[in-house]
Amino acid sequence: MIQVMGAEPLAGEIWVQGSKNAVLPVMAAAILHSGVSVIENVPKIQDVTCMMGILSSLGCEVTLEGRTLRINAAKLSGYEIERKDMGQMRSSMMLVGPLLARFGRAVAFAPGGCSIGKRPVDLHLSALRCLGARVVEMDGRMEFEAEGLEGGNISFPYPSVGATENAVMAAVFAKGRTRILGCAREPEIVELCRFLRHMGARIFGEGTSLIEIEGGGKFRDTQYRIAGDRIVAGSYLAAVLCTGGEICVRGVEAGQLQAVLAVLEQLGAKIFALPDGVALAMKGRPRGSLFVKTAPYPAFPTDMQSLLLAVFARAEGENRIEETVFEGRFQAARELKKFGAYIQIEGNCVTVRGRARLRGAVVEAPDLRGGAALVLAALAAEGRSEIHAYEHIARGYASICEDLQGLGAKIRLSE
Ligand code: EPZ
Image (cartoon, rainbow, N blue to C red):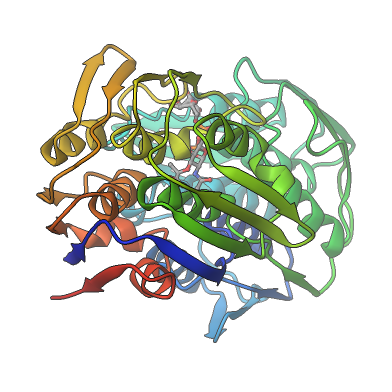
């Protein structure tokens, strides 16, 4: 559990970890090449450990030294992602495209819902079918087959990040040209495409709604450095709105946080974009009467929704958030009430009337970003707080306690 003595201002500089949502698809893409991929700036988080375990179970040689991961996929031998692994980490679904590309076969299990929503995989299946895959589903088990993937036209009705990643990774192997319309534009998609291009793939248009791929390329050993985690950076910047103070977050591109920084500025923060990060200063309480809507990139990211709720819990005035990406992502709102803020949930909207003096509370992390939001509320609250179920937070934050301690917070991890 995490223990916090709150209401201390934050100050200092921090280098942010590598991006969880970039490194996971890059690790999956490494199996497309029957050789060695070296990935640098890998965050020490539970999801990376889990993905390493899955790759090893499929026959890859995987070693992590410090923050450098080496994957040798020459001896890849399996194509079935075990049910327990899909249950532990839904994003292992993104291995299906690369396995189908390498073996012409893949087996996975419908990951099932989680604390933020149902999370179906229908867009993954329809995209892979467009490239010639056949899919048989039985009791949640999905068997994929393709004699040889053929390039084709994919049109997404919704810009799913994971489905875009699966489509791109299958298409780089497919014979001929693939056009992916309506694809996700997140920075993590751009990173995946850059990594694949380093490996020898021919990809155009990443970061826009149309990606075109000339498949069937020869791949080569590659070395790639993962960019900083924009959501972890956004989490620490939001923390300063909860406590006051001034920090500098390095190792992240300010341009990837535009929608988040615009909201934090409207709440009273002073923000400076740096060549390699963001500086932010905050005096007094956040104030505003905002209505923020989450949506796919470049709009305000759903992964920052819970963190913004924590900021609203301390803000003057009444603020609202509408969550349009996941249907069940308000678990943190229920826990945040225990700190004393007035929070009302109606459907996929939350209204928050903040309190100048939040009080310490004992709470439980409901999921990864919800857990981080509870840490921020504890930093803002007076007195002592406990945040239980730390394992949720450890999935995506490599060192949240050390990082915040380094910025002056009275926070520690205890058994
Ligand atoms: C990725 O999840 C991220 N995870 C999530 O981050 C992030 O919240 C999400 O993208 C949106 O930005 C990783 O990158 C590992 P989606 P993903 O497919 O790919 C629906 C975190 O906290 N949908 O864009 O699963 C889905 O139900 C995590 O770091 C379908 O309907 O997100 C959801 O409502 C949480 N059918 C919406 O689309 C499908 O086949 C967005 O999902 C796929 C998705």
